[in-house]
Length: 257
Length: 267
Image 1 (cartoon, helix red, strand yellow):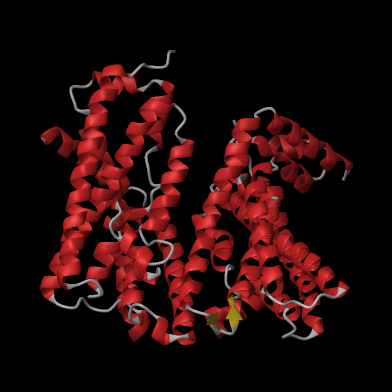
Image 2: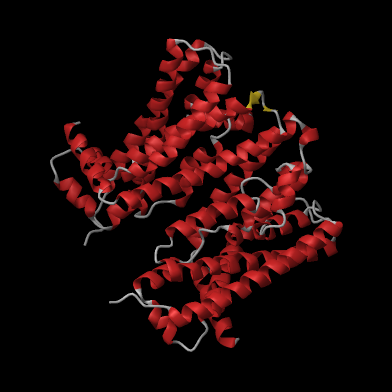
């Protein structure tokens, strides 16, 4: 943990060397997902509800998914770009060091520029909260934190799978984008609007619904209180991801140069 | 003309080599298409009377959009070109007895056409066999289908000439990332990639339809399903031709200026 703190400070310092570039990247990050927000806005100019969800409620869903994804992307970015680590033979160096492998890969990249997008997610989420009439209890605040935790873990798990696949294929697979970028894109609406099948897939295969749809129902007083604990169950998703990663590390042969 | 055809052929066969990437891309686009249609279905169920297109036409729009993604994607630009401008390798290109604009134009055209050629058929085939309101409906009539093909051609010409403007702009700015990002967002939003233009409120839609971005995917995809027909269709086709000529003309003019005053960054 202390080591990760060092990595953190190191990346922060290196980013601050180029302040303008950092700022511009933040702004562009902001605008890329701004289009998605505009899409929602204009759809709700025409429709008042979708599957029982109103505009502010959809904004909550959009905001929380974007926050979860962005946090995971900022911290687990090392796994997202793992293909290049393997390609350049840098992984050998990581294996040689007497520290945890995962910790080192995590520390290899931390994207502070994602702050632009995170900020947007927070603003949208706050606006959604203000406009929709959520009755606040301490437990609800806690459940939002659980959602953030669970979501970050699930998306990090997906990045971990993405990286593990690199052990076998050397390159990353574009196919995996369905699960990461796709979830960011379509997580803008509560998972249930895509129909029963998709909801089932998103509950039992990749637990998107556990970090978005069900806890959201609880926030809006439509679900059981136990729904608020489901993000913890979603965290279990990291276990198969870690197993795959282990298998990958064992399979690894250097491509080195 | 012949040398540009040669550039086109070269890039085209290069593009066809990336079959594995195309396969991965295709599966992504299939899932994307399905999710998009499921989303529209939810809104259709919520309030069918507020739905501006028929569900069939919307599905056709989504499938064609996925199949011809390579015609649209603004990020689908050649990094080599940007790099050659910023690192000075462009001098090698300038030494050749070709017009830079025409050469890049044919290269970009070829890249997009080859990518679409690889990807569109399987996606369209699968989409055709999906059940009725969610699949790709057959074209309304044969003449309409011909007009769709014509409009499709104009779409890619407009897209490529728009991208050429961005390449040209980077002659003057050194750093191209900002322009690229802005252009990318604008194209996505105004061309109807985020949501089709009919879904916007009428007043806004009327303005959007006059912009060059509407001359991209908006026109062919709506002609196909018969959503755009009659005088509105002819006007849209005219606008497509108009914007293509304007942007290609401007691009060539900027090119001529840039060639005179381009300073190659050392090394």
